[in-house]
Length: 376
Ligand SMILES: NC(=O)c1ccc[n+]([C@@H]2O[C@H](COP(=O)([O-])OP(=O)(O)OC[C@H]3O[C@@H](n4cnc5c(N)ncnc54)[C@H](OP(=O)(O)O)[C@@H]3O)[C@@H](O)[C@H]2O)c1
Image (cartoon, rainbow, N blue to C red):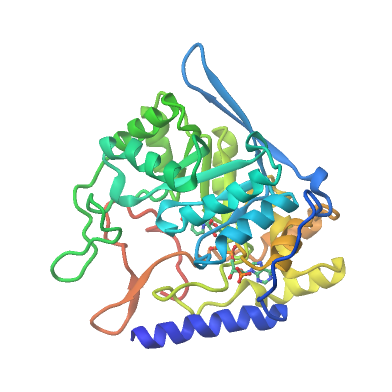
């Protein structure tokens, strides 16, 4: 089974590389802020009121670089290159297990003349650190790994809790995920608020939370979440969630905006790919851009933050150079019609009957009980 999954991942990587003519490239001297349209990039305002005396305000760049699955030995160069050419926003997480390398990339860019205050760094609290007392130490560890004094945004990565400790994926004796104590979100949020008060992060937010789960945080917080990061691409428009966020002054971020064409082992590889959607290919041809450009522009033109991941310099650059065109209402409407509420970012397992099922569907905080997942 493991071998089959590894083969599928290798095939997926091959597929993406062939589609783009190969991913390996040499590191070259990079001219600072040389990406086309760098000055035209757009931002959203984040306001975090800490108390009557102190408010943090930031401009979150609407386009950032993702770092999940960025392989060892590649992500430092990718982050350095991105920041040097003009990206202002890096999306990281403790669970990606590459924050030291991400930090090395940030340091190299800062050493080359990019200013810390001009860039926006996000990280995320992992599921094993939801107990209030574990939140500040988890962020301090992230800061040490990134080599930074503060980050701009810290998110609760998932509503799900896993057993506290240093094992990132704790299992019970029968091999199932060990959820440990189910920590209420109100408790974790207190730890998040403490991170802001200590100046370790300027803003806090949520990821993969449902509207009801966000409502609960809003009801119990003293410092509001400013951002929600969720999966978003042409097969998952998130229209209702976007409206909900707008109503609650929460900035929405779309992850896996290209439909994550290289999903890891344990994910379902039989799902139809965003890159294969004929309507998107047609639109890309009309606009003389790539399908990836259309997917990125789709989010930007709906004022949704978008964080495509790449470790390939030519893709890092082309994914950023999307400031020279816009999608009009009609084109956005055509993309919106493609929505099938399809999620890719869900860990699955094959059960004893040989059926692929959602791994954490039984967790009391599982967020998407009512959402279609592929062909399950
Ligand atoms: N909060 C969460 O739970 C969560 C979950 C998933 C992701 N995220 C964040 O969102 C980021 C983006 O999502 P993702 O990594 O899942 O998927 P994605 O950005 O949709 O896709 C990344 C994949 O697309 C390839 N790619 C990038 N640009 C391309 C282009 N122009 N043409 C062809 N292929 C291209 C990349 O290959 P190469 O790297 O080989 O170039 C990589 O394999 C993550 O890295 C992470 O930071 C957050």
